[in-house]
Image 1 (cartoon, rainbow over the protein chains, first blue to last red):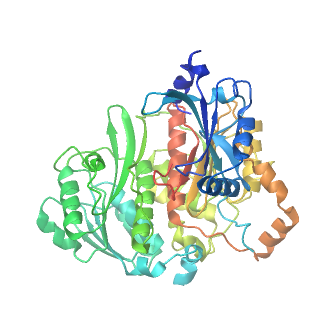
Image 2 (cartoon, one colour; image 1 turned 45 degrees about the vertical axis):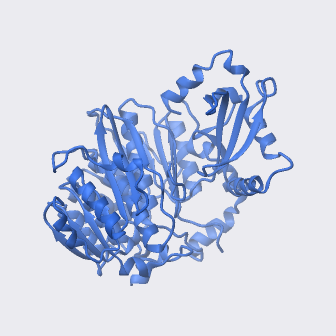
Image 3 (cartoon, chains in turn cyan, purple; image 1 turned 90 degrees about the vertical axis):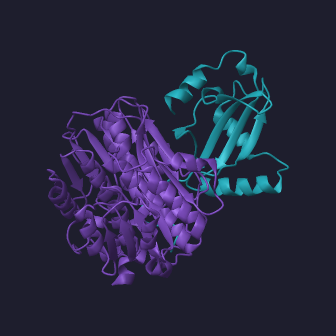
Length: 127
Length: 413
């Protein structure tokens, strides 16, 4: 996490904590991920990991979302969920940055990436 | 011999070595390292026909390029790209790589690319307003976008400019990857690939460095550390050099059968006047690392990576861990001063290893009946470059983050 990002988090004031939370789980380095939106009051005390599980277990997914979930599942076979290259522990607010839509609506955003570690020389998937 | 040398990349699904071997690639450079590094890596990849316009090349890197690949042919014209008449040099080139730092060449090449529909891959490092970094952009006709403004170097004519061997290593990895993508008909990035960090100050410390693993990552970590001025490095690796290493382990061009650690130390000492040492052994939990300030993890398996993580945690050493595949790489830092999690913990390596059968692992490695993982030079040099840059930032008092590189992502990291 860069200094700027840390500062952004520290800058979240009490009013902003009442904003909706947008959680995005991205497979690897994909530009688009699976989005979970949580209204104020529904996420504050919950661990980020639990929110990730809830997002991944969403029902009634669109075809695009199903494809994204498949990609995420592939990454998680031997991979992990990381936020800005770090382990996800604690609550979503600890990782959130404040953003706003083009229309000026503010929200808190937490990007999570499903990352599969690279080994370097030996392929256990090929026999 | 050729197929043995290139074996590890020929295993990549959809790989078309023939188009690389038949391609003609133009390069425009300055009197710095960038063009020479590109030639060395391109030769290892199996590009055979290069035309270079640059006032000078690093003869040691060019020699390595020639020794790596017997079919490598280089036409080098000493000079600058300051007039459209120079365009004739690049007749019949499939693409041109612009690694120069003067605006006139940048503009002339984009104009040539537009007029003749030739892809132009632009890569350079820069220092500006207290920041350092690199930029890479692949121009193909139709991409007359605002990003092009960022690709034009401010000085119109050749002038002194910022150069950095470590950033150059990363740039050449990315530009070579885009070269491969164009020639093989794969998609190229339509983004301005950019990496920026605070300008580093001159570091006076002389850390004692241990590099564990002297393969592709170890080669480029060694080169990057040497370009950064570090001299006291010990390379540890139990293995000997094989022919199939030569598509990415650039310093081993004529050393088949010799110790990797010894050859790497010897070559770097010779090229860079370093005081490198070699230790021909495995890294295990009893390995004493008290003499070192930092450990670079360049190993090729998760089991060793776990041992490195645990040992560095117990002995309170900085660990810079790198891992690669054909199209991705990761750089994870363990800094005992910050009491963070180790690479093995962060990446969940314990769970992965637990799921593998240790008996099968030992047996297959020992019997050599395993299927080697495909491997290619680009991700190794990019990952190694970031590993060294991360270490420099730590020494500089900066707080670098972990980096996850993905060549399938348009922004890369």
